[in-house]
Amino acid sequence: MIRFFNVTKTYPGGQLALDDVSFHVPRGEFAFLTGPSGAGKTTLLKLIFREEAPSTGQIVVNGRNVSSIPARKIPFLRRTIGVVFQDFRLIPRKTVLENVTFLPRVLGMDREHQRRLAHDALSRVGLGSRLSAFPLQLSGGEQQRVAIARALINQPELVLADEPTGNLDPDLSREILRLFLEINGRGTTVLLATHDRDTIHRVGGRVLMLEGGRVAGDELISGTEPRPELEARAVEHGSAATPPVTEAEEGGQSGSCAQAPRPAEEVP
Amino acid sequence: MTLGKAFGFFLREASINLWRSWRVSLLAVLTIAVSLFVGGAFLLASGNLEELVARWRREWKVVVYLQPGVAPPVLTSLEEKVRGTPWVRGIRRVDEAEARDRFRKTFPSLADLVDEGREQMLPASLEVAVAADAGRAEDYQRWVASLGEIPGVALVDDDRDWLAQLATAVSVARALGLGLGLVLLAGAVFTIASVVRLTAYLYHDEIAIMRLVGATEFFIRGPFYAEGLLQGLLGGCLAGGGLFAAWQLLQPRVASSAWGELLLSRFLSPAEIAGLVVLGAGAGLAGAIASLRREKLGATE
Image (tube, rainbow over all chains, first blue to last red; front, side, top):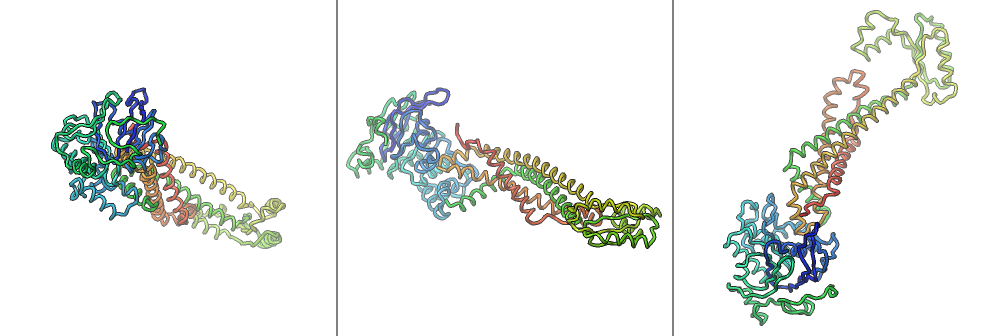
């Protein structure tokens, strides 16, 4: 789903954000992206949905080389990716329904279809009855759930989350994290950036560690909390703690963890 | 999304933008309304003047003023001489009493001057209607000059001279009005551009979110272009309405005076009003496009 090939990102002024980063997140995987502040987590996510372009290297998202994608096609890439931020990024003057249905509106869907999609997405995050509320009338946790519903409305194959629990108390954080696990349980690839090591150790799974703009670690850890959705899928696919990835989906490669990066020449 | 749905969305968002920042929007609308009102007022006045000049051209005449006490046989002989010319379409005698009546009607505030018995100031005359193409005849000028040499004639006044001057004055006034209107319109475009840019900054975060969820450039900029268009449209309608109200107010009061006839005898045509409104809308749209041309809306860096 996501492949980075020797990606370096230098901001204007010479600030090095990412240095020769290579990794692979297969389709359907739940992966944490962690590291201290300034390690390059947000930059890495921005590169995936092309808010930023890499200085060198190649990035392939869902079979599409986003490093060289023309500017006019970026909106179409973003419609296939759900993005959730720490600060929710909701439009305060619009209702929950309007916030969530923005993309269907852009796509020209009729109102009834928009409403149905919004209701489905909001029901998935437990807010099916708050369609006409405004963001500021909601708690932080509810606002983040609206943001997640917005990210899910187009049923993206990939969801990116940048410190989604950073503004929430521990109980709400757990609730939001549970939502991401459920989303992943339905087959959506999730890449979640966080510097909260407790959360990572509680949930477990694939962990990509960034330090000083480089990949300092890529490991699979066991969590302390049960993950029923993973267990169910593991039983279904006959393996433990490994998300279902087919060879066909990932170009002949299987497995999800700590794969050696492919050389840049192999970029489609 | 179809174009129709997109425009519907743009107009809805633009209306919300206008409503949310109604003070600056009102400023922009009023600025464009004032500039179009001024331009429209010049158009109205010059249009009426041009129509009058055209009418006078159709009624072109040479007035032969007579010396006091011209004997009737002399007058008859004079009429015969004039009538024998190919471009003369008709002759009308205007005696001193009729001249005084005309003066009173045309200049009511100056009526006392003729009532004081100074009859010499308004002599009898012969009004000679001349064919419209007479001015092109080679010997026309000579003919006009020769009229002045006929015994009993005090002065010959050819409309062509002052009509040409009036037409020039109308053209100058129209050019001045156009220039002033354009300067004001440029100011209005600048104001609209500033308001639209301000709105774009106000909505920076929202635009960033729109980008994030995959809105195209067309979809992001559309509401701002629609906002400029709406401001211009409202300004144009306001200017048109204001002109009509002012004309309704002034026309009956000045209708009987020379100024009324000169400047306000008819209102702008529907096509001219539509032109003003379209000009306003175009100026608004141009202001919005110009203001956002170099802006990368919603960019995080």
